[in-house]
Length: 437
Ligand code: UGA
Image (tube, rainbow, N blue to C red; front, side):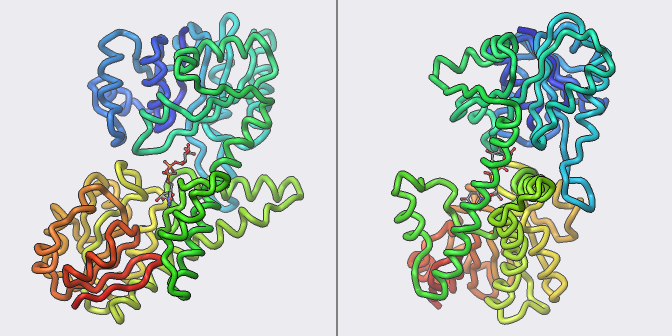
């Protein structure tokens, strides 16, 4: 199979690289010349574990190449995937589809022979039909079918997610296109990955519904965590206790500072808009968006309260990215929490293993060389992102470096009893405070 991947951002690049690993001939296209030049040199535009190896191996094998012009890639392709960005439109929260539609116009001009055009980016219900209309208008005699094939990979574990997905969803109305899509994903059938064929509208909505459901699950457990704190219960026991019910499932029940990232905030907002436009507001998703926004401010207040006011205090912040194993800062809770603490008079010494460069674009904080450097002389530590290297800090060293032994862990990566034993005052999420001073 010959595949053109239009857009070499997170989804496009990971999908393109992994599809070439399946044995397909893939050309990844991006208008950003410096990005393509870097990719040709083996330099990745994002930090994603394992991505550089997959790219290098498939470039070496001659299956993966990079281009700035889509013409050649599209004209030779059996399937053209649109993986360009769909940011939140400023002002109204709708997904901005200008890149998708611009790609559709260019694709139309370059199509030759029968081709399946696939929307891979997360796009609102109805977009695949609009893309089809654009292509038909520009090239009425084009031989093509449209398909919707949303991507469910997570940042930080994107390669593993693409290689072993829970399911592949394909929305399309033509049997010929279904055959092409079956062929694209045939290597996954060995793992018995379910492939679900639906209409394009269902496929597009599955993506939003999946993200909104996961965001709801997180928001639900975050509310339970607050209730646990008030009632003297332990949210980790509650998560486990409900998660063992197979109908609920234990995943995505970690209480924390609120969800962030490039997907949940944008996609929940877009679903809210879609539903409102359809005259059927989704009350649950609207509540999730509002509760999650408010949560980040609440976390800043929680930190201030734990410090008894942060004016003039130096706070070591461990982790700035929205989750570990990424350098992505989009909608990271740190972007709300850190400026709030600074506005209240705190001095922030931060460390993030991979996010320092990205964080520097958004936050004006002192970036330290490692966790201990950040902690040195601080009045307390706040753990904002659960990077593995923060999970087993040398507690004696931490205590010795701190002015006062206060640890605020918004990811619950330590056990309260252990922290008390190590002599800390330990504040976490949805669990009783421990005080070993
Ligand atoms: C999410 C989905 O998990 C993917 O399936 C989807 O493909 C992707 O969005 C997308 O639409 O492209 P991602 O944003 O990479 O993936 O990261 P997640 O691991 O889902 O985490 C999202 C946020 O939820 C993070 O801020 C994380 O800290 C938070 N989270 C997650 C919790 O607070 N608690 C949890 O139990 C799980």
